[in-house]
Every structure is written in C-alpha cells, then in structure tokens.
Length: 157
Image (cartoon, rainbow, N blue to C red; front, side, top):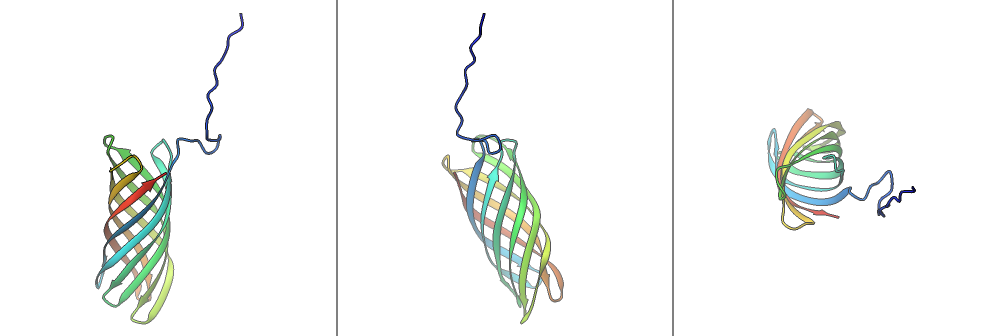
C-alpha cells in the first residue's frame, strides 16, 4: 500500500520563514540628561521571529538637555511576551554608537542601550507603543546615561 503525503506551499524560505514579522516605528518623547531635559525622537526598523525574539536597528535624536546635544544609532536584541491578542510587553538590549556636543566640545563612542515597553495593537498592522529607554552616551566630560520616555506608532508588515 502506498501512502500519499500532502505538501503545503509556503511563501518563505528555509532561512526566512513567512511567519517572521517586520516593522518600522517612529517614537517621540522626553529625554533626561544629567543637566536637563530635551525632546527626543526615534526611528527604527525590526524583525520579530515567532519565538518571541528579534532584532531592531534605529537612530535616536536625544535633543538638547542643558548644554548637551546628542544622537545615536543602535542595534539591539528584542524579547517579546504577548499578554493577550492586543497587548504585548517587550525588552531590548544592545549597543549604541553615539555622538554628542557638550558646550562646543564634541565626543563619540559606543555604549550599552536597553529598554522596556508595551505595544497595543490598533489594527492588525498598526500598534501604539509606550517605551522607556536608557543609553550610555559619550561626552567630553565622561559617559552620561540618557533616558527617554516616549510614545509612538509601529507599522508591521
């Protein structure tokens, strides 16, 4: 007796399955420097695997806090835990390359960045994001830890 096996068609490949979800996001909020506060903006892209882990790359303009102005680019691993069909919690850990200007003295370097947040789905592809990030930024006076609290939108595709 010969058995028949059904095969399903998949739009993904072995190394990039179709269940991977990519996204792009834009956040705006407040940055907190040691010597002041500023307006901050982040633009990022990412990929999430079905296991709950993913990668994210982006840039953050920390704005101006006191005499300091800074921005940086990061690459981070992201872990996600769904709470229900609408809400998920996430954490990020990675490295940031930053550049700063502190009263005319410029500096740059790498440091750690991490964050916690929550996604709330508005539609299947659009989500609101509440996020807290903290990054080590190089200044001519040493390293400063700048935190950012932000709200944003994430488009999933």
